[in-house]
Length: 178
Image (cartoon, rainbow, N blue to C red; front, side):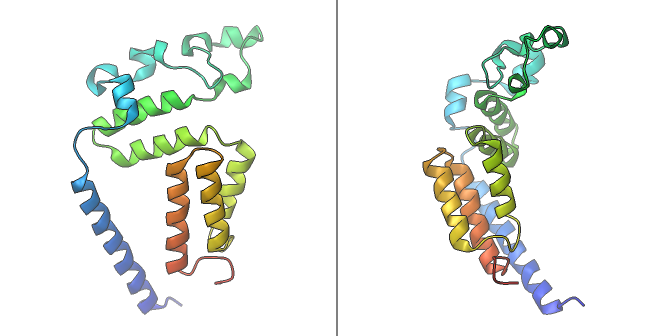
């Protein structure tokens, strides 16, 4: 059975958080001020999609050029699985384009993805599982956030984990609150 008072409170919190997000979005400057904008200077109208308009800019995490990753090269053994991983720079370029066309949340997701390229896959899966409701205490999530920030230089991801810890605490979704 649904607890109507609890449901009403959750809806109220969500609406309040949406209102706060909208206010923050209004305060953000229209101009993209990220390092990648200054570094890459991409124009969404001329430069998107990158793979078609500027394939020379796209590199794999191993430094291989986008043009060098072909079926023929793979069959020769010149392309390995690691060559299919995207580079953080490519993600940052895509984030710049997304932001310039007004897709700020998508741009932020791409920036977090760029940070995660520095985190080993196994650790990402452990963090993912720790972020599931009732799997971690607030303290455990804060330790993960500190690790992301200090060990992997991933401040955006760390901020997201800290935010999740706060939300889980408010909504009683932390380990031991079942």
